[in-house]
Length: 243
Image 1 (spheres, helix red, strand yellow):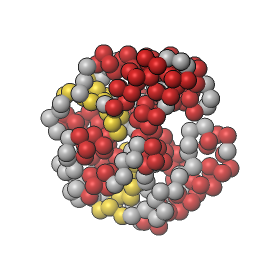
Image 2: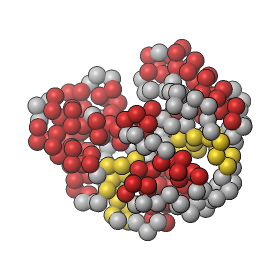
Image 3: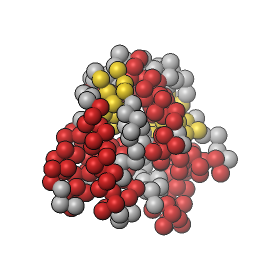
Image 4: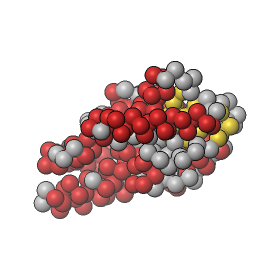
């Protein structure tokens, strides 16, 4: 299968290891991964902060870039950004009065998958041949859980990783408190939510906390680091790409 990598802003600017791991994993499984180098921000940040009119140009650009890629599927190591492409892009186009763009955006969205979705639902794989000898707990991020609805697909994949001991995270579905600008606008509430998440992680005794969104891992990892915790945060793609 020919797959286009939708790298996302955070992976591109701050956490490239997640994007590199995504490519390494898919190529190991025998697929061709291409990187459309004209891609930019998908516009989620603009939409979430109320700048929908300004987001139209970004939506149009995203659609044009991934239409031109001519791939069977589009993958991103981020439930948040995939959720934006699926749920926000057509809405933004329609509210701007551009029905043609909305229809094109829906077509691109229909081929856009979060990594675990692509592996389990499209490629039919749960054992990716990974080896990761650590005790791991999984945090299901809000967008992957509630917008993209990845369900237990990440857990299916983690259970098949040799050497990995998977431990359940108490109150796993509770938000970590990041929420993009929520963490800035509501800093005290965000910090309290993060404290609860870190306490839950500590209960597991895990060495590693993993998730499918770099944004949430950044938030959790920052808190753990400041607290002097030995627990590391590692993107799920990096675990699945390990051998």
